[in-house]
Structure formats: C-alpha cells, structure tokens
Image (cartoon, rainbow, N blue to C red; front, side, top):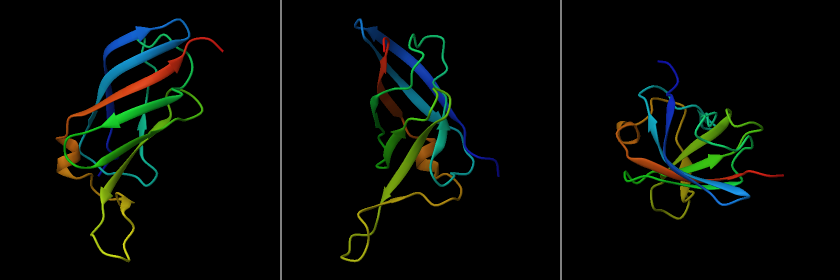
Length: 121
C-alpha cells in the first residue's frame, strides 16, 4: 500500500508583526505509516512566512499522540504519531506507530494544529 498522505487545511492566521500564528487541521489518508513520521507540507500561499514553524501544537480526538517535527524547509516537516503502550513496568509509556497500515482511528480522527511561523529573521 502507498504511504499515507497528510493534507493541511488552514482555517485562520493571525499576523502579529514578527509572527504568523496559523490555526488549521490535518487529514490523513489511508495508507501506510512510515517510521519517523508522515511528511507535512506547509508550502501554502495562505502562510505568509517563508520559514518553518518554530513551534507548534498538534492534537486529535482519537487518543493518539501527534507531534510535528520541523524540517529544513516548509515542505518536508514530519508528523509523528504515538500510541499508548500497555501499562506495565517494562513497557515504554509511548511508542511510535509501527511501519504498517495507518490505523483507521487515525484516518478518521479530527486533528487540529497551531503553528508559529517567524515573519522576520
């Protein structure tokens, strides 16, 4: 199966002089999750900054933990997905999804994000 594709939707952006705060969502298509995360492309004309986001917050409703990892450019960031491991003393508290089919709960999840993009450097 092909790798899952992340589609970015921009719902609002707020420019504060030095920063562009972006509010939006991610939709993840059915496919395979790859170790290290799925590629996120922020090369959207609604985002005024030419820089990668300095920080961000990603949340969903399904119980999975999402983390955005910035790349060297706006079109190669990664969205890593973690799951809660079984609760026992020997298991790590969180583990990245395995390189396999992306779970249906992730594909059906409502995922939103805030991103802070620098306007001036």
